[in-house]
Length: 617
Image (cartoon, rainbow, N blue to C red; front, side, top):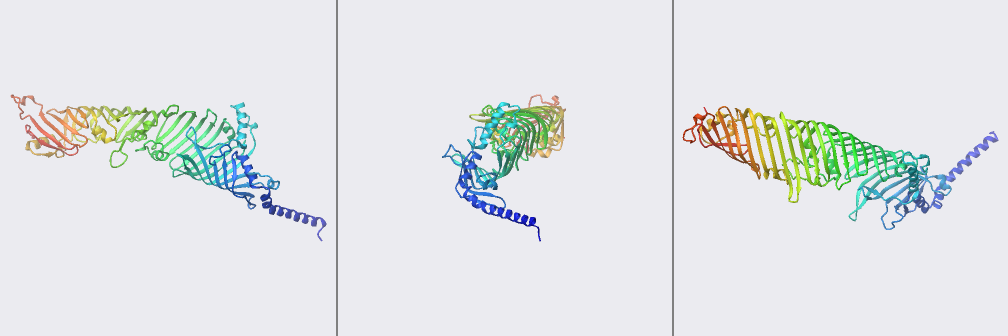
């Protein structure tokens, strides 16, 4: 027979199991009688600092966790009874302590908000944040920590921080709304995540996902001393933001006092700057903006100013280094700095601020200079190698300046076409409309290489020379600039060759008479001693004041007009033998000169002989 000790042990275990079973079975009854709805609401209010109301009756679940399920829960400001709730949730699930419940108390460590609506409002710095509670354990802990930080801001005594528990708040399928123009506007949807903060003096983490402006975003943040941070002290913090258009991260130290600051390492990357500008609704015309961009930098940010040091930048996979400074004290933000690149696409860079090139395939579009109303810019650039469309440059020094409606993009020095190039593009916003000025000065360049880059392959001297272009016109569109521009063009070239002209064939055609296309006599090259061009441009029409090319035996000249808009030509010209002895004594045109008319268009000019004084033989 079993010993009495064994029998007594079996009875004790049985009684214990029965008691536990009775307690578990009684928990819903106890909860329904002692953990009443108002008691839960009171505890949530004391925990959060908001006035909590629960419209539905709590439902208690024991398995697998002891928890209360609350419906139609709202958290509101105590002092603003007429204002809409700060947080509304269709359901809140609260994990409860079974032992505390048996004692008639409410202790919970996790709250899950299902389909919550979080109401935020725009702050003075432009951010959207929810209203802060005016009391509660969190607010009291922050006030206590503020005193600890004030006693020794450089090294606060962390042992004096409050140790009140906080727990974990989870949220699923929520949304964030703001009142804009008297209507609730959704800023974030499909908002899910959790905030974990075991105790006020411990570390805290936040992770969340949602949809912002049609894109899925992920946010992660953490701090080893969150209470010190909220109390205005300095604390380590990490933050990351990830979305398809862009990603951003910060790892360093932050201070949230009146003189807030950030000091640490930042990283930013975007596969398409144009997409980022459109998605962020920054108000800057995306135009033909840069493709991919990435930035890694040491950052120091204080109120009104952000400094980027040891900045590594990659634009369309072209790496660069430098420093940037953002200031926000004036009416408009000010961006200044210097960047040095090994290779750089200048047109792509500048088009981040204005469409410097056609945005579509159908032709040039409207020029949007509204960027000059949104930012002041003073950016200095250098590049060992750069491109501006089809033009390749080396040893480039450039600037981009935008201020008070005036935008200037300069290449102050660059090597190109075997010589030196300087250029300037200036947008000046005036009451009567934007005016655009274009300047180009090319010295000691290879004329043939310059002509190829400019799209002019015929009748361009293959020799060393200089070119100057000055154009001014209204800035409504790129076509309007050139169609209505005023200015001048001049060029001088030394000894070389005039490509695209078979002079014997040309003279032979003029001797025979009749029209002929310039293409019919473009299969040759004429050696020249020099060439000179001077033209005055008025309303998009160039008038040739002087256009001469001199060879050992001949002098070729042109005069007349050429239209940019219609691409039409109306020129007269002549070819004169260089031998003065052949000139007739009576001063009349003799056999040493042939005259002709040039008509048609730039792409298809034709020649009509006027006189046939020189034989093509």
